[in-house]
Length: 76
Image 1 (cartoon, one colour):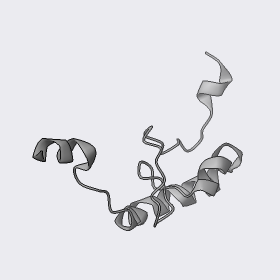
Image 2 (cartoon, rainbow, N blue to C red; image 1 turned 90 degrees about the vertical axis):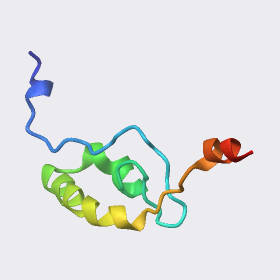
Image 3 (cartoon, rainbow, N blue to C red; image 1 turned 90 degrees about the horizontal axis):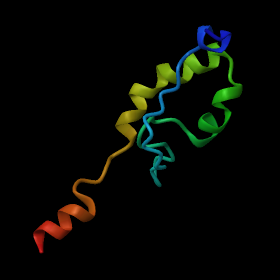
């Protein structure tokens, strides 16, 4: 096994839902700011851990739309 798979690093919170909430300026999938997303691979383990600790509180800042296009089409 390669050493790259044995590294002791904080994993990324990315869930492959990469949409930035226009008001909160946070990703609606992982709740990171754009600068945190772009710098993630260059952050230290301590910096990543700090970001991860802040994410649960940020989820309250992102109010997701309910229904979207699919719900509107059903109402027609």
